[in-house]
Length: 170
Image 1 (cartoon, rainbow, N blue to C red):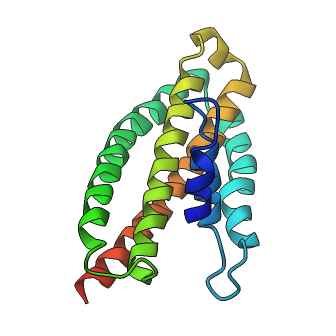
Image 2 (image 1 turned 30 degrees about the vertical axis):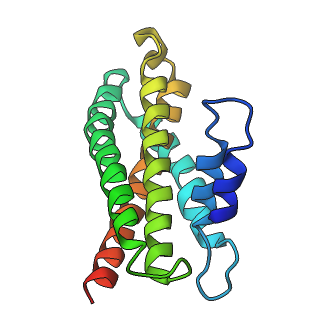
């Protein structure tokens, strides 16, 4: 994670999300081997594709408003949680050393939450396409793929938040 954050500052474009994406992906590792987890990559990046295709083809053209509403609410909550985790991480750095697993879990949670906000922005951007575009199945499919990916990412954030709570309170 630390290397991904250092690399992020080297970009030439101020709105580049490369660092956020790279840092998020670096959290998808197998704790036993320390390598990127194939299962996590399949779960978060491959599974949403067939699921999104199925939902996008099954959903009527007006159904795109439902995930947009859901994502709008959850994105605000995610962004608020990012700020809370940032503040808490700053307070906890004095209690644990820089290499402590507790702080590493907070760093991973922070990276995942930032990424979830980025995905929410992508969903809203796709949803802002003209209403005529929602009649095109490809746009609905992309929207549902992103929504499934977003929900899976939020579930991972919830799990990490629970883990962080247990570690801090023991």
